[in-house]
Length: 119
Image 1 (cartoon, rainbow, N blue to C red):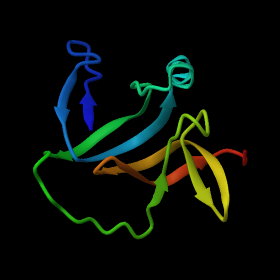
Image 2: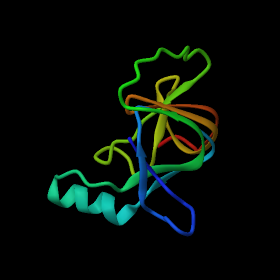
Image 3: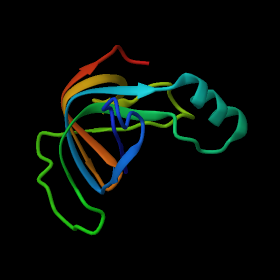
């Protein structure tokens, strides 16, 4: 996982690579032009990300177990949806923001998620 800076002096630069990142006050962002390029070219590109305040991150070599009770899995698949989403009672609901996000080995978990209507 790449962590990019939002500071004026390093804006947009990757400042860290990490397997574990804990963020607060997060927005789930999908660049629609990048997604369209994926659909046309059938090739991955970086066009979706989570914007938030990094509270703490752990290095690439660390192995660590975190209790995920009460956390909801958030996913993104450009071939299925144009937004991040969660599964809720068999429905796929768009996820727009969350108070807390935990990224563990490229899997995203969130608490206090703002959800949209079902697809």
